Amino acid sequence: QVQLVESGGGLVQAGGSLRLSCAASGTIFSINVMGWHRQVPGNQRELVATITSGHTTNYADSVKGRFTISRDNAKNTVYLQMNSLKPEDTAVYYCNAATNWRTVGPYWGQGTQVTVSS
Image (cartoon, rainbow, N blue to C red):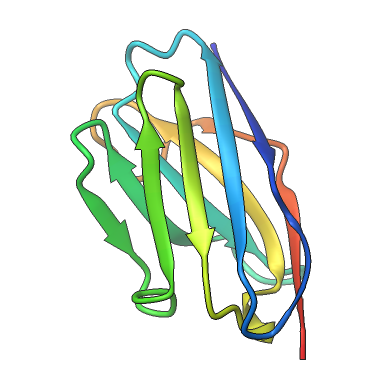
């Protein structure tokens, strides 16, 4: 089993920045893709960004140029640096871990709220 614990959400004004962290523990040797997803009530959860163990990244078009995903393999932690935040970025952000090089895996964190005020 893999446990994921997110931190770093909060309230910020439009144009501001936040950094989310996700610490992984447990049976992590098989994890090779980690990512961030977000969900607004009433909507489906959507992919924000992913990063492989080799640091290859992928972003949703809506966040390209504003968000940066990174990981520290030694600390088993993945980060999401969010700059130039917009009100439409408001959502609950979830960390995800996957095996077998899949984009989305079975392991999810509890979620952290990000609210961007206009």
